[in-house]
Structures are given as C-alpha cells and as structure tokens.
Amino acid sequence: MKRKGLVAILAAIMVMASSAFCFADTGSLKLESTYPENGQKNTSIENVGVKLYFNNTISTKEAMKADEKLVKIVDSKGKKIDTIVLFKDNLVLVVADNTQKAQRISNSETYTLVIDPSFVDDQGNTLGEKTTVEFTTYNQKLNNIINMAMMFVMFGGIMFVTIKQQKDQAAEKAAAQQDKAGNNFNPYREAKRTGKTVEEVMAEEAKRQEKLNKKKGKKKEQKADSKHVKIENCADYLNNVYRVQAPRPIKKKATAAPATPAKKGKSGKR
Image (cartoon, rainbow, N blue to C red):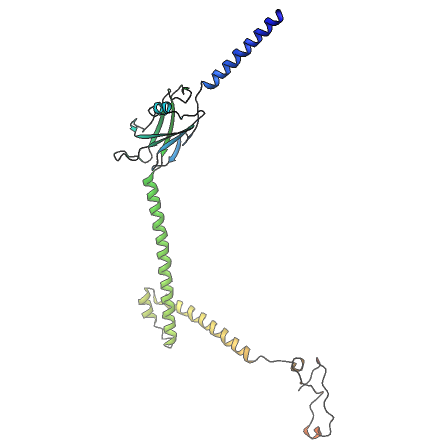
C-alpha cells in the first residue's frame, strides 16, 4: 500500500508540473523583431511603415479585427497617422495610408508605432504590455540639394573638357593654316585674338616651332637612312653571284682561267 501511494503522489506531481509548463508556453505573446528597428534613422519617406514579427500567428478573423485597432503610428507631436494594417501568419505590417491626400510625411521627423497591451494572437494570448517602435525619416530636401550639386559639378566638368578640346582643335587648325600660308606669324594679332601678352604668344610660338622642327628633322633622318641602306655580302643571299680574289685587267680576261665560285664569308669585290 505504501508503494502504491508513493507512485500515485509522484504521478500527480508530474501531471501538475507538465500542466504548468504548458500553461506558461501557450499564455505568452512576444514581439520578436521589427523593421525598421527601434531608434533607426534615415528611414524611407515614401513608404512609411513598420513590420512586426511575433512568436505566434495572427490569422483568425476575430484576432485580426481586434488587433487592427490596437496599433497606431504617431508623429513627434502625438498626432495620429492614418494607417493600413495587414496580417500574414506571424507578420503584421502597419503602413501609412498614402490614399489620404491631406496626410503628409515630414522630412527628418520622428514617428512612433504604438502597440496596445491587449494585442492578441489566434490562441487568445495578449502582449501584456505597451510596446513602442521609434524611427526617424531621412531629409529628402537635403538629399535633393546634394544630388543637384553633384549634377552641376558633373555638367561643369563636361563643359570645361568640351571647351578645352574646342580651343585645342582651333589652335591646331590655326597652326596648320599658318604653315600653309608660309608661316606668316603675327604675334600682335595672335595676342589680340587669344587675349594673351605678346611675350607669351611669342614664347608659345617658339616652342611650337621647336617641336615642329624636331618632327621634320626626324622625318628627314628616316628618309636619309632609307636611301643609304646597302646590302653587304650579296653573294651570301643571291644565287649565281660570285666573288674573285682580286680585280684583273681586261687584257688578261681571255687567257685567265674562269673564276671559281668564292666561298661565302670571305671578303672581296664583285
């Protein structure tokens, strides 16, 4: 009898303990994460909203109807923003209602999402405490100013490069025309055209003439080298070309023995 009574007591204790654990597990609703996170800066100004991820599902009509009124977004002055609440399993999306024309989302404004403690899941578990998520929108005006400044800088650089290229092309064209006309360089006229001093114009012209003379000198040297190219030791490269040991008079041509082909590599004249 004692043994049976001990077993019954132990069984009752185990049942009570398991019941307590089950009650603890099913009786809690928790907010696991949010996007944006609490305190996040520079959030989107076009689609203001918060994603809420819970540990339990919220999908029944009763729970969704009740929870729709238990979440809200307010600005820094406490003014409520019109919102739309969407549910999918354990995700709740609270977004600002863009269809309301009178509603405006401000730049660099701090907004707060507030969840009521009675927020409930499908099993009837409540959140139990007031929960808030605070976030700040980014400054759209400042962003637009920065983008405009970058565009002006980019277009200014393009204009500068284009004008410089046009000036270089005009200078090359003028130099070519002067060469064709016999290089009739007038420093006073050039100074008036370019807005530079006569000394600067003459110095630039001297540098240009020096470069031009160097180019012409290189071309003349290349032509001269090509004219004076000689082929030495032709017998080494051409057939039926022979060498003799030494030049012979024409008188001895009839009596002299025919010349034998010289070995390639020895010096002599043809």
